[in-house]
Image (cartoon, one colour):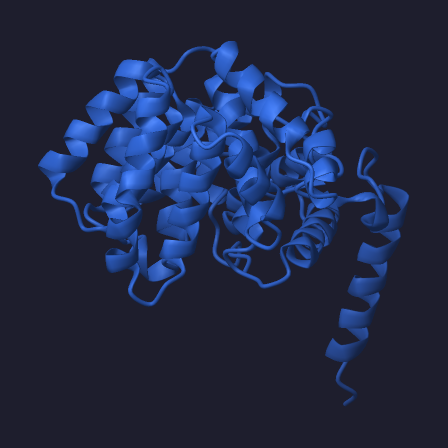
Length: 345
């Protein structure tokens, strides 16, 4: 008797391919159109100038965010400028030489020092040495919450006690009670990987999300707690309560994503994280919708957490999601969303 299973597999695969071609989803840019960590129209000139060794546009950009109390944008632009300065910092050296007491230059200097200290094999010792730089940045403009986000990251790396961390947290929220970066820093401190637990992480994130302003990225904080749990693998998710909290975090982030237009650079990182979590949970149709909303704006986080090629991993996840969504029948109900086999890594 001839075994028909190989033939059946070929026929099923062909049928799925036909369905995939006939129902190819619209709204997904071609692979070559997708950019990793693409800067917005305000940041782009500053990065171009920095590449030419000029600090003026970066100084102007950060000064504008400080003058207008755009603390969220300030933190985001700071991170991108520091990422560039890690490999090419001549423009920052010139800036500090020309304006050694400039609050914006001091902030870039402190963030860069913290990042480099984190990479050191003697991290705690190196971080303690850069503490005065954070203090100088904080004192240069007492209104600014961003140096306090740096202080929270610094405290985590130097093994600060809960009491010390809470004192820093109080200073941070006094300046901006809903600052996303400060909340992320606190969440990391409370994570199971550092000084807390998954329960503490979720409790903090869910309370913060409930208190968040409409449209605030703090509403995505539970999604970060979910990501931390998912990164430990299936063995870490031992209770149905944890599974429910992961899916509830994703549901909340879906609502947040829907409040922004597709292709908006501001929620791009949150949307990338949401797509990652939805793919990991096997929620293919919802993940595909997030890839549509992401458009060409791939973000290093979270894909760099699972690959040295974040753009390649993003594109692979997107293609896999497109195929799964085309081939899988609709699955009703929350219970089936986290079905076995949904993990993507």
